[in-house]
Length: 203
Ligand SMILES: O=P(O)(O)OC[C@H]1O[C@H](OP(=O)(O)OP(=O)(O)O)[C@H](O)[C@@H]1O
Image (cartoon, rainbow, N blue to C red):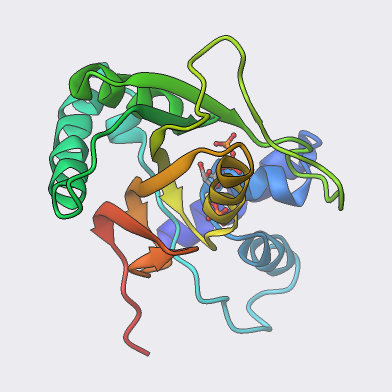
């Protein structure tokens, strides 16, 4: 219960700091539906059942470059195992801003690949015509075999967006690598998902 109370308190605090639901969801690594539930619950004690979601706190890894490095080595190992099955080389590691960037840069170094950074455009705002972008300050993706890197998959919508955008840029998304996969799927838009921790719901 303490963890839930902490989450509620944090959600209320972030809301009072002016963050919108999507931004609070990003901060807490939960779905938007969960944020609404947390904020509602802070006012009316437990009227609706909790959404099926899992809160993830990666701070013990994220605060230490050494731990991030060690974890990135494990992810590289998993990625290589996956790509070996199809005899595919990694050309570029695409980190999803913001949380995917530290891991992606370490993985690119380890794999001897280029580093690209994907920015979700209109972050937290729903536009029908928005497009994500590959930062011009890093590597390009056109025509290249891409490993997509992020910290967490919750609904999978970010991964789907990146995969679609990469395909539109004539890039070849080969694997999505994350620390925690809360969706528990094997593939997303026909691209294999690999994670250090995969959450599989039993109910
Ligand atoms: O699978 P999904 O439901 O799309 O959620 C996963 C995404 O949510 C978080 O990012 P966020 O949108 O919070 O952006 P941030 O990395 O800038 O915090 C996380 O880092 C993933 O990118």
